[in-house]
Length: 341
Ligand code: SF4
Image 1 (tube, helix red, strand yellow):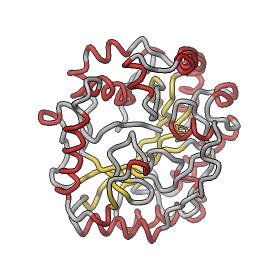
Image 2 (tube, protein in one colour):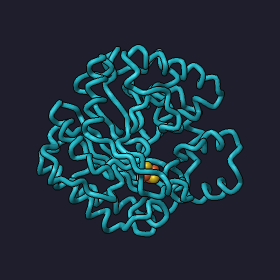
Image 3 (cartoon, helix red, strand yellow):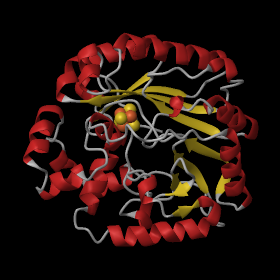
Image 4 (tube, protein in one colour):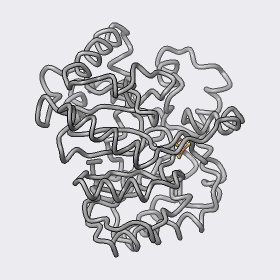
């Protein structure tokens, strides 16, 4: 799981848009409202740990709903026809049993798919017709041992490796040629496992992207920066996360505002509601996308939110930390770096 806090960066006027203006080329969204992992520093995983999600009724987007969404955004010139749909924000896409139908529809109409998964489940490939237009596959890993999986995701590590192998094999058999990458979350306890993850990535023809794990949602970054994180949370974090790089990130933030820039994007919840960005979920819904009929309307909504958010003196610091997932720390392990695309 990745996190963003906003759709644009604080130097927006100078550097932000890298794609065709006036229509979105990228959509971030979920296709379900559940994740089965227990990641301590993720909003969803933390709620799973505390049992706060146990009464949630699972929602699985259907292909009909997805088609309605795509046609609406296309017919109103909100997106480009070859828009990338990045189906990850707060939940695990492979848990949706309708996902193969959605993927087949995406393929039919020329959508580029980017999917991030925790690999706890293999998609039912017997129902998937083609993976030729898939843009990318990202496997999110909290380490490379059973001990690390016990500390974060809570899955059987051998099963995860098997699922990654199967997913890649089946996708490639259906024409997948996009990027395949392990998104390795660096914690203090898994530093010694990076070399093994790299060997696994090499064996399967994948890239390895190492990032420092951080507070993902729930205000942890803001509280840490403001010195208001609770002593219990600070104690926990001091045993799991890395912080030495934060001061430098902030000191060089003008540079990183540029380096971490992304194409202008829209973020939707699994309920097809417009939400403020990747740091938020359906609880922060603004309005249904079906009540929006132009790119400009969304753009204006995001502008207004941005103008308010930037009033917070910590906004830029928080932004640069949240976007540091784009930065590879591979060089620390003697590997070539790479950037998320
Ligand atoms: S796998 Fe991703 S969405 Fe699920 S709990 Fe972990 S970080 Fe959160």
